[in-house]
Amino acid sequence: QVQLVQSGAEGKKPGASVKVSCKASGYPFTDYYMHWVRQAPGQGLEWMGWINTHTGVTLSAQPFQGRLTMTRDTSISTAYMDLSSLKSDDTAMYYCAVADRGYIYGWFHYWGQGTLVTVSS
Amino acid sequence: EIVMTQSPATLSVFPGERASLSCRASQSISTNLAWYQQKPGQAPRLLISDASTRVAGLPARFSGSGSGTEFTLTISSLQSEDFAVYYCQHYHNSLTFGGGTKVEIK
Image: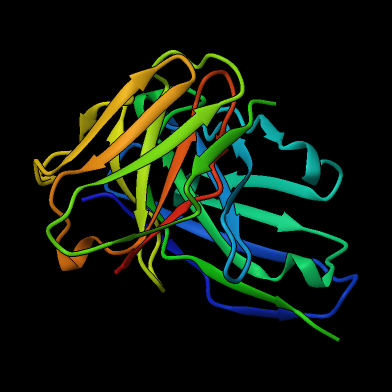
């Protein structure tokens, strides 16, 4: 079955960077785009961007452009999300999710379990 | 950017009653819309794609409708496990989520 397993919780200071991993299994990793979505405490879902897991091409949502780097390692079916210049309002649960259909944009049937990133001095 | 607006923000319903959740897009998205349910401490769970297609195994009390800019998620008879937050999401050449509707016990 499809599984997305994310790395553990992180605590960071303002100005630092964080890198979250998402290991996929149960499907052909390079056939589907991987997206990242975050959720601040008590808030809604915010889409961050996607990576084409076959080519490595990425697109970040406008609020994250210049701070978000998405990469992948196809040899271990793992996607990574690196967010730099962290601020306190980056404190959130970060999710990876696979876009269904094989298109760039679609619905998300499969989600990682989430990685809590806490930014505090 | 297409803005998704959900209403109401909170819906108080008695168990067994019908709940109708609204999602409006700032421009036409055809039927490129999904609905999710999220419970505390859990990742979102996909309920419906393409505005009205239920995921396999979803109880028939959940239904989605609409096209263009107006969409509705209807839960025909609320069960205790249905009290949660519901999000809509468009995927029409981009992707954004609505702000969510919390369905709470009245």
